Image 1 (cartoon, helix red, strand yellow):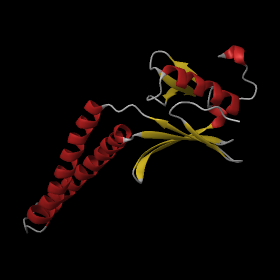
Image 2: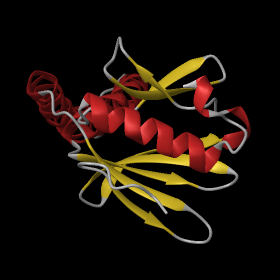
Image 3: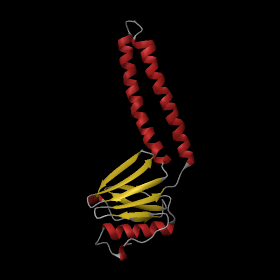
Image 4: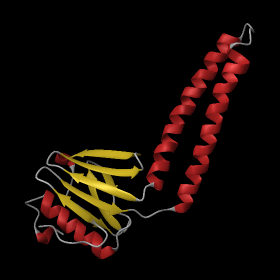
Length: 177
């Protein structure tokens, strides 16, 4: 039986545990990434239109070389945009969904039908802990520190850590918290 934690909604099935957690919105970062995403889209569309209209079919003898150079630049620009898009989705999400299965831990930050999904192998996930520095729950995955549930208050976050450790790590005792 899972405890009732403020702002956390659990659903447990035989195969997995699903938890829905609030996130803490950071409007400054969301605004910055929204502006960067808008600039990226405008420049990408402009680059494609420029290549088609002015370069590729211009009939000049340098057109093929210049088109190839611009296509390489557009590919780099596209890759940069994927990074900006991922960061924008991270800051635009209003909730996190955590799926805990015996083999893996999945943290999803949905934005409508889109969103970021990170999956972790449970064999490399450390027991959960409350980070005073970040003021949220977290765990270590190898040498990386992963934080989640930034929208929880201190008491709810500590109760969540205790609950997750009881569910995921059977041999993790109360004295280890």
